[in-house]
Length: 386
Image (tube, rainbow, N blue to C red; front, side, top):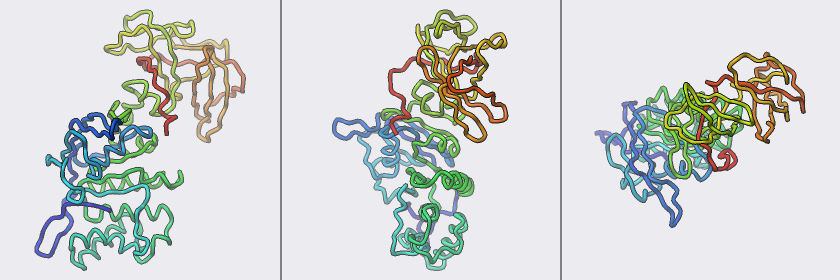
């Protein structure tokens, strides 16, 4: 159910007319369940009107954080501020927040219009005003003419749009969404991504979105906060997280990559490493002083050449064997196995592909600036936890 703090007028309570979103600030937020720490002292500042996604594997603390912002979970310690107002101990029904869940939570005995009307009745909005607001929000979610239908007469995507309409009909300054598209098929989800972005632009509200889908987070968000074991491992734009991951966990979680381990042997204008007996050059990272490291290379940054083929001076290259070829329509993905057993991935545009077959020996190569030097990490691949 959608929640807000209404504004009093002479005719009852009406939605806020301003479309300005609210700032959200989390200070040392912590949540424990007995001996288990779900959220471990996070700090996060979200700007008014920003779209921020909390992304991470199952059990990383992202949904618990959203629940504390909504007021459905009480923080063990720390503070929550919305537009500077301390909300930590404010009941959920008194927070100016809209909510959308993965399971639509529509009333099956009510029509679409009646479902959307429910939070307006709670706020004692006049009948004429309610009718106008319902018509407006149905147009916003592109469900004009569906007001008299019941939830059972709608598709999953239509039901989710009704749930979204109910959450935004009173113009909340903050909208929280917890895996709202998780039950829908890929094509419908892709379409709804664009609809959610459009609605965010039109409303101007602050959106906080929870998902474990990396692509969804990159498509929707102004910034993404990567959760790891109850902490925020890194927050930034999708481009920053993809191109400049702060650690190996983030690098693994955001997109595919080839991860190569080796020893650091010298530092001058960059960092020289030895990987599988070959000299490898990568940009130096400030503060990196390890004797061993890993180089992360994204699949579209790595190229393939036939074994023994002459390569340009200055590129890094390692021998490998093609272990799988997958046609993806606009691209072809080659899975590789390197001499030390490391598995790698190369993605080539279909129009630029070269025909390398299973079991074929190849040379994988990339420019030094396209590798990211990171500290080794003993944690498991986070993409396997979903």
